[in-house]
Length: 386
Image 1 (cartoon, helix red, strand yellow):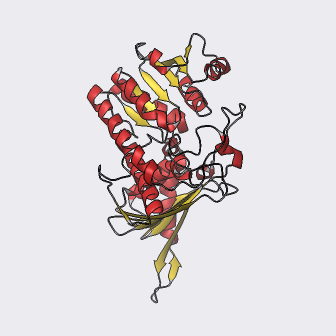
Image 2 (cartoon, one colour):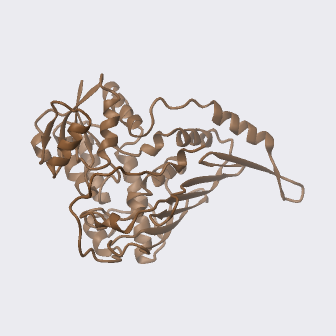
Image 3 (spheres, helix red, strand yellow):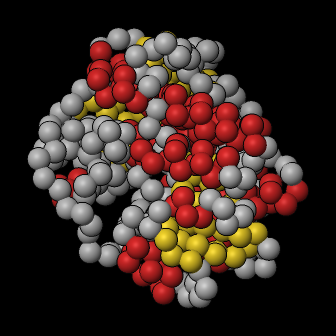
């Protein structure tokens, strides 16, 4: 029976707790930690975690022989907390974004390798039927070589969203919608396309003057094979209509799922390729649904890796790649440069201090609240429809 600790009792911790509780025969939540212990106590009571220890300082758990830790704290805590638990012999599942800088990502990966422990970064959108199936369709190459990718990471957050004390600051949250909302779409894009070689981007803050960070960004990408991509990251889009489209040489496929294929007439104009559309539709429909989805599926993946010694789907290297692309978007948008990837360790944006010094600060955060009243959080589900 694997012993689990939840570090951070904010809104996202519920998804982790519910995930672990689906595998009661394999693991047990034995501890919860939060800077505000009453929040941890509330989660303990809410989920019936009888016997679980509640602490304010995570370091009180380092000697408790915890097998796996879910780090659900604000981003600037991710690296120190993860590294301390990895050095203490625990496996770590850390929420997105992986860390506040590439330097911290490298330190986390080094700690995991040194201690022979698993470091997995939450990217629960990969563990959904539409994205898993879309990935399989792309890997089949029926759609042909990908020529263009379009990512609409559209969310909406009210002005008061950034009133929370750690949100909306480069130091504590590490960025705005590009880092904290589009991160899942960017992870999925890299999973399906690989890393681009060039990035040109713009960003702005158009509706949240209580935040230093961006609430809207647009990035253009160029991939090694000449394919192009574009990512729009936003918390100002009503309806939160999220979309990922891949235009292949033979067909267009997307999440939410849709397939369209064209063949050429003698004059070069398009004609619907019904045979290919049916072939791709059949492949998609015959792919098995996942046994678990979302956080529960990723937790199952991590538990399985611990039990068997196998790899996890999303490791520290993968989490770092996602942050590298996001960092390159911030660099391009702040400097106006066309950014070349990979980013070197001597790049000014490699460290958290360098990023804070060089990135655009839109507004200064003049006031804040310690906590919001407990409310259900809403999350976009557009990619999971159809």
